[in-house]
Length: 492
Image (tube, rainbow, N blue to C red; front, side):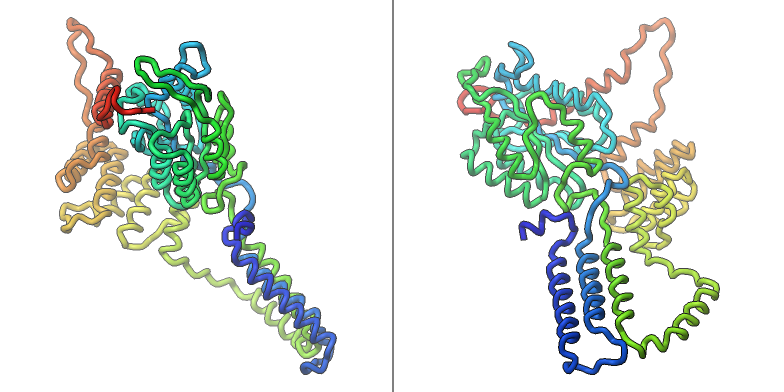
C-alpha cells in the first residue's frame, strides 16, 4: 500500500483489480484458443484476440479510475503556513549574520527577504510558536502587512512559556484546508522544551502525515550552548531535530541562508513533488478510456464472421447518424455547473467561470453567480441575482448565506458608484450580526475622508502612518501575554 501511495495516481488502489481482471480475461482467451472444445466457436472467431481486447478494456477501466496525474497545473497556487519560533531562546546571539545578531533577527531578515519580493500564486499565513501556537494572520497575499506585523512581536513576551514544537505543529496542521495545495514553513532553532524530543517528533510527524502536509524548516543558531542575554538560561540549537522532522513529513531542511522563494514557486507550479491529495498536477482519466476503446476495437476484430455480416448495416447507420443535424447536448446539472464554475473562479479563469455559471435558484448558486458577475464588471446583474437574498426581511435564525449576500451586494453598489446604498447594506448587516469584521472593514473604507484643514493650521500627521501605528498597537494588545515574563520558569 505504501508503494501504491507513491505512484502518480489519484486512486492507485484501482490498479490492482484492473490488472487482475485483465490477466484473467487474457488467460481465459488463451485457454479458449488452445482448447476449442470448451465452447462454441463461430467461423473466423479468434478467442485469443478477443481475450486481449477484453483485457485492454478491463485494464483501461482500472487505469481511468486510478486517474494518472502529470503535467503542470493550469494556474500556480500554494498556501504556506509560516510558523515562526517566538520563544526566548531566539534571543541567543548566534544568528550567524554578525557578532551581535540574534536568532530572532536572522529569522526576521529571512522573512523580510522572502516578503520583499513578489511571490505569484503563493499565499502566506503567520503563526507564532511558543509553548503553544499563536495565530497572527490568516492566509493572504498582503506581504507588506505581514512584514509590519512582525514589528509588534517580542520573543518571550507572548503566549505560553517554552517551545512546544509537537503540540504547535499539530495545531498548525489542523488549520490546513483539505485538498488545497499547502505546506508549512518553520523558522526555529529546533529546541523543544515542553515534551521529550522523541515524543514531540512523533506527535508532530503524525499530525503532518495525517494532513498530508509537508514541512520545510529553516534552522537558526548553533548546536553549542549559548547564553540568553539578561537571563540565567542557556540555549542550544537542534538542527538535526528539524531535519528529521522535515524529512519525516515529506519536506526537507533548508540550508542556513537559503532563499525559500524558488522552492515555494516550484511547489506552486507543480514542478516539485507534493502529496497526491494536495497535488496540482491535472488528472488524466482519458488515458484509460482510450485504452478501453482500443480493446473494444480488437475484440470486434476477433469476433468472427457473423458480426462481419452486419458491417454494411453498421456503416449505413453510422452515415445516416452523421448526416442528421446534431441535437443540442443535454445541459449539465446545476451542481456540476456550480462546481466547474467554482474551480474556474479559483484558478482565475473568468471566461470559463462565465461559461459554467449556475442558473439555479438556491442561495449558494445565486451567490456564486453574483460573484462571477461582479468580477466580470456586471454590477447591476449581480444585484439582480442577490435581490431575493439581500432584501429587508431576514429569517430567524440568521442563515449562513445572509452575510455573504449583503457583502456582495454592498460591493456591487460601491462598484456602481453608490456609496450611500453600500453603507446602508453594511449597516444592516451589522445590525443583524454585530461585530462582523468584513462589514466593519468595508464600512470604514466607504467613510468619506475628512476635508483638509485651513492653510493656517499645521498639517496633520499622515493618516496611513497613524493608522499603521494604531493597528500595530492594537495587535500588541490582542496578542496573549506571557504569564511568566522572566525567571521562575525555564522558557527556551
